[in-house]
Length: 122
Image 1: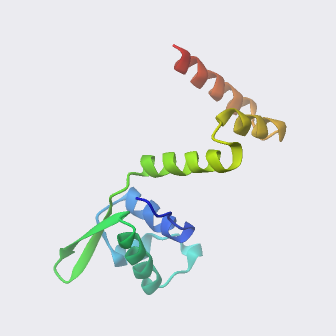
Image 2 (image 1 turned 90 degrees about the vertical axis):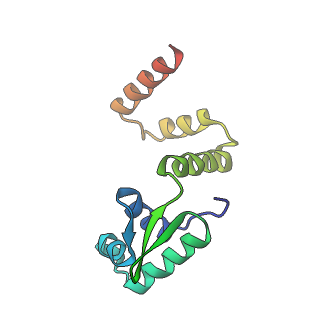
């Protein structure tokens, strides 16, 4: 998938990652209510995701069922790397330092990072 997924499209992807295949109506019913989207808005977003090869669809009688082609883990990995590349020159350490300097790491966050580093070393 070369083209970026917008925030709105990401909302639809989260619905499909949670459960699929789903019809457009099913997706509409599962989108968070604060989005206040019409069924047509959801259909437009599904069309964009099809064009970006992020999802596929199959006929089911008179409707289509949609499912993700892109795995959530792959999407998260790509977006994370893109963020680190754009803001921190591709290096992870400055990101962690940035969070630490702004007191955004709790003691539990630090313990989890230490445990992760310990696992990576062994």
